[in-house]
Image (cartoon, rainbow, N blue to C red; front, side):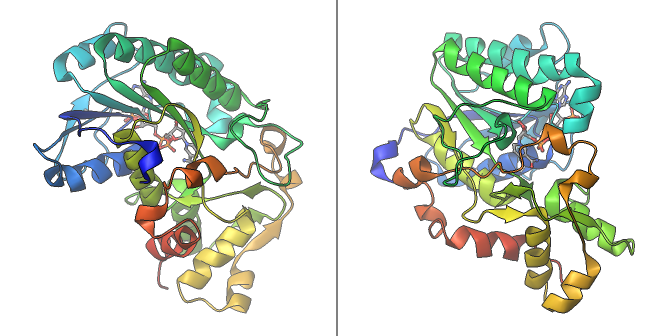
Length: 321
Ligand SMILES: NC(=O)c1ccc[n+]([C@@H]2O[C@H](COP(=O)([O-])OP(=O)(O)OC[C@H]3O[C@@H](n4cnc5c(N)ncnc54)[C@H](OP(=O)(O)O)[C@@H]3O)[C@@H](O)[C@H]2O)c1
């Protein structure tokens, strides 16, 4: 990463909360894969209720964030100098059905975590989402200082979590990520594995043509978050892919990356307006993120540059028929 983002000595112990999740499993892998390259090495801990696809080199710790006292006990036991919080109630529809749980995991947990980290002198990276934004997107994409007006319980609770982390005033960075796709280790999580699984079942997946995101492949997202976590940047930062794409366009590009001809790819996907979806009104029609600030920090340089992220991501997520 560029010099302006700063650099510090590597942490001796890194804790990934939500380490079994779609993103969290990749975060644990990103740290574990490079741990021996760090002077003195790094212990990588992953905590969640279930182990998930444990990263080679990472240690799993059973942790239920809803249990009183569980968070300080975990922090006491592991004494991490860096915590990444990818623990969340992260499904939009489930958050509408269980708003109290969404509040607990998405807002209350990050707030308590930020206070604990500040007290212990640990750095915190809180993962958030493009779905904190509402309607009326600017053509340039949403910037960090644009007003977030969430449309859903998910977006509202994630925004509250961001605010509580930033208000706690410690060494904390909130990273807003876009729609993620890529390998979920056979669990059909994320935008591409769910698509490939539906195609494998012989279905013709319905993909929206009029809902825009700036998608990012999940292992690249994890590497970028790792870079940021090792730096000194604080506050709020948008990290996303270089293309503003609909779900349908992303689907076509994923199939093309897997060697499927454009006409055949179109035939396999059902292009629909988002009005077909009962939850469409809970997401902005355009959640594209502006990543100027991250680019100015030189964040994408180590991965071959911002524009290269798109093809690299598609290549990592591609499935050959
Ligand atoms: N996926 C995306 O496209 C996307 C896009 C933008 C931002 N994000 C953000 O990225 C983060 C991770 O999302 P994700 O897609 O990886 O979600 P996910 O796959 O649902 O993972 C959520 C994680 O939280 C853990 N968790 C849930 N309830 C818990 C509890 N009571 N105690 C302890 N752990 C608990 C889960 O593990 P157990 O169930 O094993 O406990 C899991 O490890 C979230 O902050 C989300 O807002 C995701």
